[in-house]
Length: 345
Image (tube, rainbow, N blue to C red):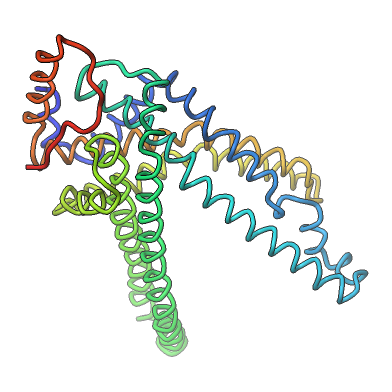
């Protein structure tokens, strides 16, 4: 408990370190869960994606396009869009079903070890997640709707910003053409303004997506219902904009960095011969995807560490720890279940 109290002053870098430490500590259990519910599904979804098929790339080649009749082109495009739509539907179905079980099981194992100081097996964690399958599904749907709303607002802002940016660039070009000596300062200011806008957008998106991800531990740990879990996210995320946003942004950067490097290296090798090697490109996609999915639970560990940190910062965990001790005494020191013991103060 004393180690948890130190989290009251934690920064986002501390949360990142703590999340990576938890991933290393529970790597075996996390890898088993990942291998059961995530890696095979994501590999299959990517392999069946029509973007990675020869038919798609032949349609993009001008020589093949000239040889194909207009009716065949229309038919191929419609088929490809239907396949893409089907791939998106399958991704959505995975997100609201198996992904919930995987993330929920990892959250339970980490929370039990970190806060309750007890061992939860993979079997127990998965069983309890399936017991909350319906609530987790509804919570995920609400989370996805929030994501859609965030990206819709972002799209509108970017669409409006493009007009303002186009006028600004035109003004800078005219100024640079007429007044060569004073054009450097506005150009630098313009570049800095664009970078500032990109950083601000990243932080805002990271805050909302990171904050509402905590619906997962709110359901799994606190036994909240779907709608109540979203409200719980608002309570925990209050006055913690930069902590949540920076944790989300840098956590995603850390996790995506290595797979991105692998993909770039294989992409350069594929282009080395002067002609794009489709087979090598497919292999690079599969390898990069494997690395990405192996490392994806790192994000769950980081976000779980963030959830624990926010609870410690906002309300402490003394009440919950006391409840666990009382239950253990009454139950003859039997191992309790993770969920349903926390009552919001």
